[in-house]
Image 1 (cartoon, one colour):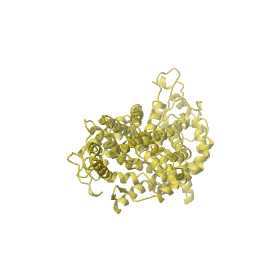
Image 2 (cartoon, one colour):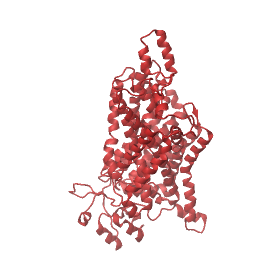
Image 3 (tube, one colour):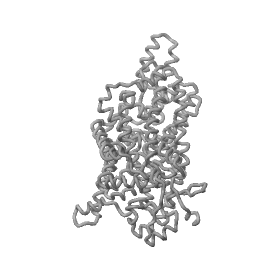
Image 4 (cartoon, helix red, strand yellow):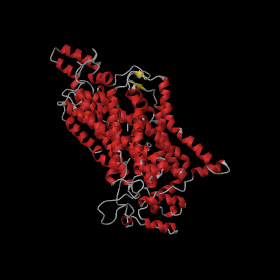
Amino acid sequence: MAEKCSEGLLNGAVPGETRKRDENIKRGNWGNQIEFVLTSVGYAVGLGNVWRFPYLCYRNGGGAFMFPYFIMLVFCGIPLFFMELSFGQFASQGCLGVWRVSPMFKGVGYGMMVVSTYIGIYYNVVICIAFYYFFSSMTRVLPWTYCNNPWNTPDCTGVLDVTNSSAGSSFNFTQMLNQTLKRTSPSEEYWRRYVLKLSDDIGNLGEVRLPLLGCLGVSWAVVFLCLIKGVKSSGKVVYFTATFPYVVLTILFVRGITLEGAVTGIMYYLTPQWDKILDAKVWGDAASQIFYSLGCAWGGLITMASYNKFHNNCYRDSIIISITNCATSVYAGFVIFSILGFMANHLGVDVSKVADHGPGLAFVAYPEALTLLPISPLWSILFFFMLILLGLGTQFCLLETLVTAIVDEVGNDWIIRRKTFVTLGVAVVGFLLGVPLTTQAGIYWLLLMDNYAASFSLVVISCIMCVSIMYIYGHRNYFKDIEMMLGFPPPIFFQICWRFISPVIIFFILVFTVIQYRPISYNTYVYPTWAVTIGFLMALSSVICIPVYAVFCVLRSEGDSLLQRLKNATRPSREWGPALAEHRTGRYTSALSPSTESQLEVQLLNPEKLKSDEAGVAVAISIGSNGSTHSQDSKI
């Protein structure tokens, strides 16, 4: 073993070696770059790509919305994505450990953890509902096809009922069509009256829906089993979970465009309304969608990048993953609107009458459209299987973010060896906290968390992170760090975006979010004031971590005056820098104290280097500028 470790290295691989070895023995690394890229794609591409982007696109000018969308991608999305990946990769630490760069801002990392906790709780409930529909689709006739079920009301009128009645007089057809426009669909009644057994108020929890509780247990068990060995196991699972949704999307797309009325739906989705380009709301929606869909400020990007090898080219990866995420959103729009166009044509109504977003699209509108297709259970199984995989890809990273932050923060060998038990503990707590969301009022709480827990708080966290790195730590220092890691400094365009353009856009998103704020409602139900207050408290709970920890850190810092304490609290700690001593070159060569060097001993790939380090000999390792291996990783 010692013989293996003493051989010359290049990014953890030795000449003639058939299997690549971990560069960071203590924390581990991704098996290869493909695992990182697929995990990052799975993290960034989530349910929002399917049920939010297409709706935003047709609501904000169709094809014209693509223009501000891609502008925001270039000037905000990709730069922020690259910043978070490079931040985590350079330090090989999760969202807490990276703040050795400026200890006073460690509250940003805690804020990210709080946000990821909220999202992880309700995101898995959405996955569990998808599991429920997936299992319910395994039947000859989808249970939401007709209105002859015990849970249906007299107001229920099925799409197929309209068709079957159309053989009568034109008067009867017109009467039925008018009823259809005001009807309660069987898919909506199945969703509200059978799956959810929806109560009349958010405070009226009612009973726990045992089928949903069982599916929630299944979804958490799947997430835990896929993360049982951390990135070593999840990196293998993503070969399937990150790629198969594209297979399903393609199957549904091919089926969709062959249907009558599909072109109408797609044209409705894409037709540009150029007059809306001048509307600030359109630009605000574009910026918000880019920001939220890429998963910025969740902590997942930093965490997944921390398992990269030090010289991995995260610059290239950030561009590939960001563009893939946005292209998936556009592609999903074709799939969704081809089917909705078919449904609108079948009913003889405008596409806007059947278009929806959020849970309404995934569990009401789209399932209803599926009932019109031949062999409808097959298409339903494929659709909900796709939703499950899209959700799991994001959920893996949310859970790994929390586990990595806890393990890195404790940092001793005991907890590192027992990381599996930490993962199990986090999964069990997440399951228990998700139980209230499976009650009859659960959907109210789910939407409350979705609207407030991860809204403006993410924007604030991201803005403070950007400012602290560029202006507190210093942009020149950070550019040098990236050059040491990648072999080249960040391109001038990214330097300008990080320092000026991206913070301005983030601030614009924050202002837009505040101006556009409307009290939350679900269909006709308006949330009471006390529930909205809880929502704001959830949003503030992540942001408040930043000033609270800053005050705590300043009070603990050494110094005779407040100014001196502030300087010490914002100065990088001695532990800041590359995790492995072999990568600590340049200004980091003598930054370690003897105690810190001894902590890094177990991570060194070449024990002989340690002896020379202890003797005071500076060891410089020549490594290719871009490295040769790549492995990294990263809602709704």
